[in-house]
Image (cartoon, rainbow over all chains, first blue to last red; front, side, top):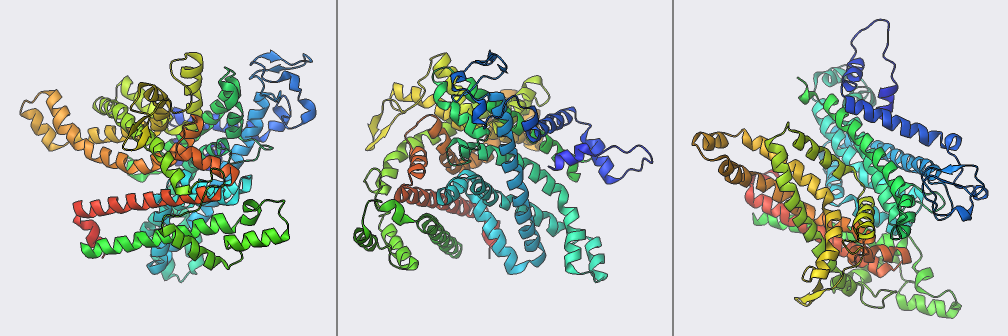
Length: 307
Length: 323
């Protein structure tokens, strides 16, 4: 979500002082690809937020669905000739365009929600490891190593095999899978930062530890955290889609993009491609745009790459 | 060295033990096994007898010990669905998954190396840019969706390749393999390519980075100054040196390829371990879930152990550091 806040920031007119933030914003928009990706991603977020207002149909309102309109090709008119199914319909006669808009909501909420929660858990543990050191550090980092030595899908599969499907269980699985990336990043940065003079100065001023951590250490660990966070949102969305496709993710009543794609699977063999194709395109565009923004954020925020 | 080896072995055993607790508690304690194991029509007396027979009336730690002692003897219970030992089922499905994973790894090297080499030698050319953009796509594309699109294009529209299943198999070393028959190979092409997609992108990036780094090395300059042909400089001096990291990473990725084959197997109805575990989770066939998780976890622990030991043999700093 960091990407959107950066994008929405007004480029102030009046006194043009070069703050680090303004420099960051202007450097970010130097790249046309990243700017484009940010615009695309912002549009996707807006579509997801305003889906109930702009979608041609409420795909969950059974009264609006007509089973006679099932599996219509893209561009067909509905039976009552009142609307056009631009992206076709699925087996229930549900407009795919509306389904995708609502599916995006679920995918984005699950992806961003789990990424933020994992960031909180991971950053806290990483900070604790860096600041406490010693045995605490060893235990936490061993856990991180263990978590990272197993592929994400395996850990997620394990948790969903225990807990069963459901949105909250998917979010929980994603948090378990992702926290270690944040913990490792934050610990690495915090270890470097805490040896800096400003931390020493803060300690000399006898500031409380809590204040040093939250007001001095944490803000300086933010740049790599933001980069990891952006990429992890994309990974979370992709993993959620995969789990839902496998039938282990979100319930049928709240289909995310992955479940929409899974629904089209059986019809694809008979050539009805659009039920799976278009949700996949939506998923792809979402993931690629987040990745491009994240990639560029890494370039901008990494001091080693500066001239 | 032997101290390091011992420490690492004990560590691996402890991790395995911890994972067995997690898996056991996860599968047997969170849900209610009684509900699944005993038919809902059974009366009270029958239920009580069945619970006693299954040992479900004992405290959890006793159940765990029984589970553990059985597990050590290779008995992880019988599948409710197939009524066969769970481990045997996993063993039967393993060849399908293994050949798919090896096929994907082979494809990743076969496709990734030349593309990465090209992109590394001409980093500013249009071809290199297209290859790199493609590799970003390879990282971003959801595997299962690409699998569906492959089926749609090559099986449904063009009709070149079979869409699902393993095709004809031939026996080798007492197991059935698809890659030995022409029909089986045709069935394998799409799943292997699908599974390889991510690795191809990885190999491209590794090779490209390696080539760009190696080209600046003194020994490459020297080989050129000596007047060797560009083919020889690249083919021998550069290529040999980039192979080491590429092979290491691809080898390390084999484990995750096997884990991720869950997705590919589900898309292509490939009857491997991954398809088995998904089906088992959906029907709550607990012994099979446990058997799969335990064998995969064991596999990962062994892979990590071997890699660590190899590193410590190759690089003495690793074992000094851990003291």
